[in-house]
Image 1 (cartoon, helix red, strand yellow):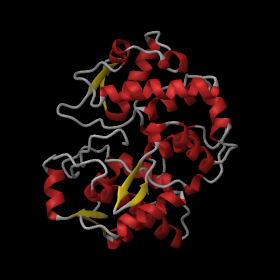
Image 2: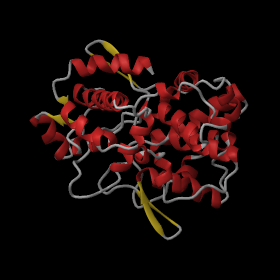
Image 3: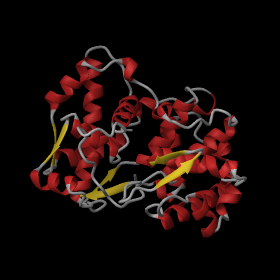
Amino acid sequence: MLKVLETTRIAVEKSKYVKINRKKIAEFVKSFHHSNISHWLSGSPLNFSHLSTEDKLNLLLVFNSTSFCYWGDPKWTIEYKGEKYDGSWAMIAAIMRALENGKSILNAKYRANISRAEYQEILKGNVEIPLFEERWRITKEVASILLEKHNGNFVQFVSKANGNAMQFLELIFQSFPSFNDTSIFYGKKIHFYKRAQLLVSDIYQLFGGKNYGNLTNVNQLTACADYKLPQSLRTLGIISYTKSLTEKVDNKIPLIHSGQEEVEIRANTIWAVEFIRQELEKIGKQIMPIGINDHLWLIGQDKSKHSKPYHRTLTTAY
């Protein structure tokens, strides 16, 4: 999306704390193959293939509405079918567990009226999930708007985009306030739209570009600026931090949302992926940013001792 690239470039050019290493990008590109590309959900240990097409679509909305800020000490984890999950997998498992317990979590009317106690039960884990109140509010808000404007029907909402990914993206962040992910940097509005872009990308990829995923202009989506992508990019040496920022991140000192350091990390993440895309294009490899995005995210799931720590920001943006 041009607005994301154009505005984040401002932050990249004015960055004081984060730097992109173009030599490391060249090294990374040499070993990058089409076989590396897979939708991040393809790595899921959870299976929801038995759901109907419409239920899968609604699951993506419910998940992306509240998929943010999973870090903590201890991390929020849930048990599902004898296994423990954290992060994104835990959120998907919570949705699946709710369905199997008879909760109509994929129904907008149910979500719009869900009580605090019932939502607590759905997200029950070893500890309370970070930003629980915000997740509860957003869950009800998204469902209420869907009911008011689209008869509670997300299929109807998707159809309003006329099969255009950019139109769909704009429809999401204009309709649902919690998806409107922007920051102010040196007096300029910087557009990220992390969760909105991921929702569009997930729908496109889960449905293989068909049915609800039959979308044009998907190549204009950028990387999704979260905390796992910069972790992978930093581990690869593609981005680096100043000593002061390194000390904060490595010592798990939270960064302020929309503060200069955090905006720089997010903006440089988007442009590091864009530079990777451009280098791949030079050698005849046409790979969309969302493909590179998912590959880097899956790298971040490797919790080896070689992985760099990720930055921590208390936010509903990612």
